[in-house]
Image 1 (cartoon, rainbow, N blue to C red):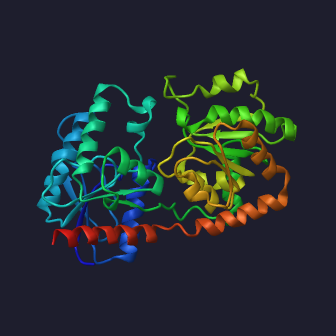
Image 2: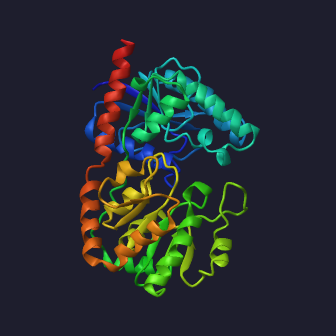
Amino acid sequence: MNFHVALNAWFWNRPDTGSGQYLRGLVDGLRAVEPDIRLTLVAPEGWQVDAPPGVGIERVRLRGAEHVGKVLFEQKGFPQAASRVGADLAHIPYWGAPLSSSSPIVVTIHDLIPLLLPAYRGGLPARLYTALVAASARGASAVLTDSAHSGRDISKHLTLPADRVHAILLACGKSYRPESDKAVDEAVRRKYDLPPEYVLYLGGSDVRKNVDTLIEAFVHVKAGTGGDIPLVLAGHLPKQITPRFIDVRQVIDRMNMGDAVRAIGPADEADKPSLYRMAKCFVFPSRYEGFGLPVLEAMTCGTPVVAADTSSLPEIVGEAGFLVRPDDIEHLAGAILSILVEEDLAHDLSQKGIKRAACFSWERVARETAAVYQKVLDGKN
């Protein structure tokens, strides 16, 4: 494959976000499996972009502040830069494509959360932005997404032909692995003051994540274990409580679970593999996920998984973990307890998770993405 792709690099410097991780993983994968594809990152002037060797950088003067500047970059700056460098194709790796472009457009829509979930729609500016990017997606030559479930949502709610929407399951970074560096793991244990054994949740506290149900289920887990194995919640807690966020500390206090649930705050990216590896079990009861990367990260680290049987999560877990209804408190608690008390079951799920996770790689993501690029360009020609 010999063509030139311009990539919107707005999230390149945000590897703590899903869009940033996706962009970096895709670029690394494309460089490994399709080195003849020329790549150019388009970023605002003044941003420090650590582009890999052989990957070009094109700068765009950022006009306007904050949200206005971002929209102008997406709608004007990026497509003009793609044309300026002579790109054969423009790829926007998040839901923010331009309405018009001289190059064919590929856009990745990770999920339709702002469109489908009322709590996430925001005020008038946010709703207008969602309407804008929804309209722009309808003009794209191809739409990529992270799961078959998200693909069906996109086809239905954006009224796009199914053959224009391509589901490409994601991968996680190479630092996630089952092999333990005990010195590193123990340093992470001391850093977050973690107990010898714990159950882990890593993610947000917004309402779709369903953390309140998890805490309620852990009341039963505490009763079954005598409270010796706590639940560790890793992730940002909201600065302000709104209909979009759960007041996690209030839920913990209301259920009198202060001795069994520990909120450790956000975890550094480099520490996450150790957090997963040292956990007896990882629980992810989210009601809606475009992909659900923490589940794959935990499986890759060999940690037994309990996840909700909703949206994209079954596509990741398959038969390598417990899938439970997100509102079934007793079933959720029972699945966690089974892993904690049955060593053979925990070992079996760990091995199944590692084997299944090995099927997900950035090289596969890159090959499938490059095939879509080629399909778009063949259709143009």
